Image (cartoon, rainbow, N blue to C red; front, side, top):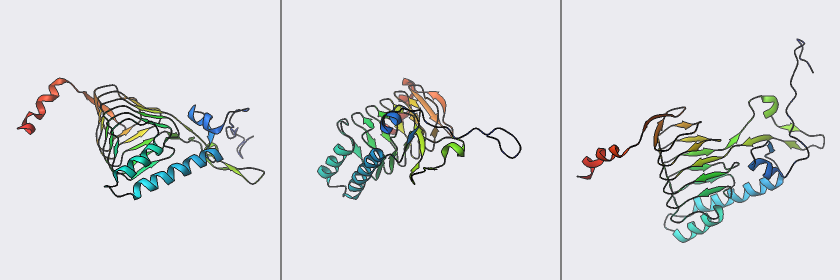
Length: 224
């Protein structure tokens, strides 16, 4: 195939065949059809649960906890989310103990999201595993002969260690691992791995220093 100048055109990429279920392909980081019926049902369920949680008053503690138990099965103890929350699936997110999320916590867990213990998320934090092809020929919705359509994308996992703090408006992109004990500054966009015990800031986020015991002395003035 060539364009009107005679240059070769690379046709849109096609997923391999035969293939597993679209959910299995998705969780394995392969191209998948986001409009697959099973995935659509799972997203609809998650959307309903998020809506239920977000509509509950703050003092309805038992009801809010029950919704989170269904949305995030197997989460650790002492999970606190102010809401509103937005999860694509919920069931693909693993959360440890003593995790807190401020307002507008968004997790598009098409890839697996793993969060350790004692992690604090400021307002408007987004964890975004989904990835779309760069070329529009590969990214656009494709119409099928039977009248249906497919939309191929892929997703990469996000792993967050224990004892981390994320400032407000932080975005973490798929494929990133953040080590234990990190601080991610407000407004940062994390596109690469961050080693343990680091302060990282900026867009894209860069490590500016390592956290050490010397940092303890900084807070003595606030303790007086």
